[in-house]
Length: 384
Image (cartoon, helix red, strand yellow):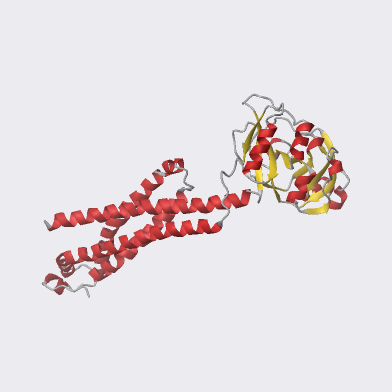
């Protein structure tokens, strides 16, 4: 009867350990997701700016270069157009066609020279990165006023300014098909920034068109609806990435504290119950412990045996819980929870559970190993 009760108690605590494993991996994954989502929003979303991704309609519908009247319509609505061509698709240079207002709004750091002006909107001028200027002409000063020949664009551009290497600018949203969403900001030491009207891009691989508008999502949606009236086979995606912007850091902190508090409370309650269970198990096995010590068992052997039993009762079920929690992440992502699951998270959670098991099991194991075999074989055992 005692064996049956002991087995039932062990099963209960094994189930409890399993639940702790599931809860820990989910809470840690959710916490990492919340932190990452806010960092993503802050890193990629220009403050106070709404974004419209411009793509061609249909997989095979040609959009072609943007007509000047289309660009003028966006400019009249105080929007900024960018056409970014990824360096992986040309001779290794990151081309960015835009307007003078884009440079005034985002103000990329200059090493020398100036931005191009409104009067130069249709002129073949450009700004280049410091490394590119040195590669072409040896020094920054020698590059100003010189031309850069672009085989990809089919045009010669006069350098009027030199940017710092690694300057980071918001240029990407969706690809030319509108089927892929990409980060907003790109850092490069091979930027070539030129007036969009001087050389509009076609539907080439690695080209990303975007419209940047000061205001909220409603303003961007209204502008997109207006642009749909133009005779241009374009489709529009408003604020494609990220899906929402987290502006208040206190909300994130409160949510993380609530999640961590819930996981911590569940862990503490489970630890107290499991600690008590291990102490009771040591009491129940006192005669076995005393007999083994009487025939020559060393205290460290008793300690390791009790710790091994604790591992079997707590660590293995909780490890299975971690695996089950990890396996649930596709379902949780479908429910739109901002969760990040990877092997690092599994290893971290399992490490926490190992420390938890050792803390719960070491004291009862130490007490069991320090029992007096004479008292264990008698009727009045004391655990002090």
